[in-house]
Image: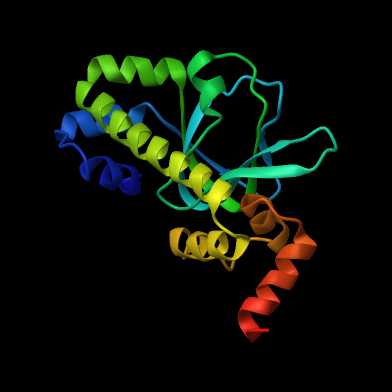
Length: 192
């Protein structure tokens, strides 16, 4: 829980009383690997802050091929933002990749928290702005960079989890097949 308060403190200053109000707005839960926290067609009722472990947000195409949208490791947030903000059914899945302890907060609790501790709304605005910039950069990278460069950027962005993820999920995040990813990695390692 200190991790959440540390994350908030990077952007806004809260009193001890406000910190307690924030913590009281969350539920802490442990999940084993492979637990689905959200399935396509469901409403994303919680925004999730990762205390430990790794989560993944992905969608499926018409051929049931999965496409990783994002990962979340310690200190990161994850949600189907369309569904969470609109409270309508979404199209993505959220699953636990590595055993996790998370803090969750419903949209109703979030809105109530904004009223009670307005500085927290600023914190979330900063996170959303940064997320928007990161997603725009990732989209531009996917449109303009070769897979090798996208993989290099992935390694830079996720240094703490790159060895914990199945190769298939990294390939999915990069937008390549697992077979292509395996050949590309071998080529990058050997220089051939």
